[in-house]
Image (cartoon, rainbow, N blue to C red; front, side, top):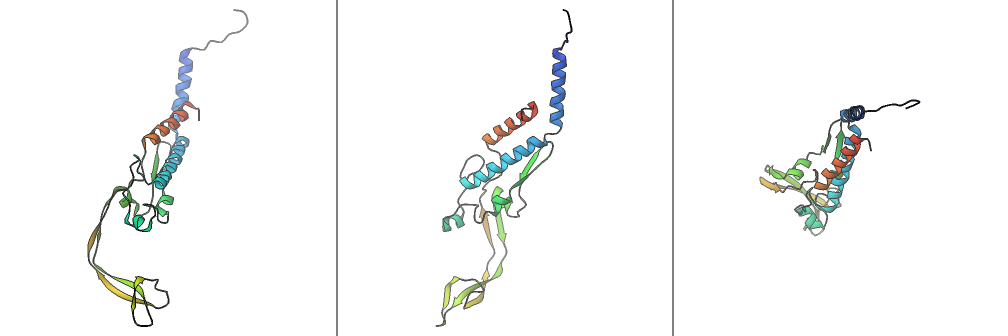
Length: 182
């Protein structure tokens, strides 16, 4: 063969490919950030649908039944507080709201006996209204009432977690990251 030639062996290609793969596997923060974003989107979708990661409907809350609203979505604070942290090797999703755990896992809330102040309207004829009013409302009168100790049982309404589709999508994100297609 006249001129010049170069020879590349399969060993050279495999070594270079593996070196690149190892380098990308050392810091997967980009992929973890992408997975965290996907998890947040999926969790917000679950709030819209009222389902857990497996697609099972949440038990309806008394407030949602009484007001015709959505379970776990009164003012949207819980949904808005779900965030994630991505590192080079993992992603962690959660919220810092104190009531988030009881909604995710369920459980019992033990309430101590206490005195509760309520405000009702006092009408001109001396009758006390049956409905609660704001303490600043015109004609509002404060009365104290004893509330006995009681236990509230909250059913679990999981909103955090990965569905089967989420796991598959996370696997695709990782595969794309590792192969350099991302």
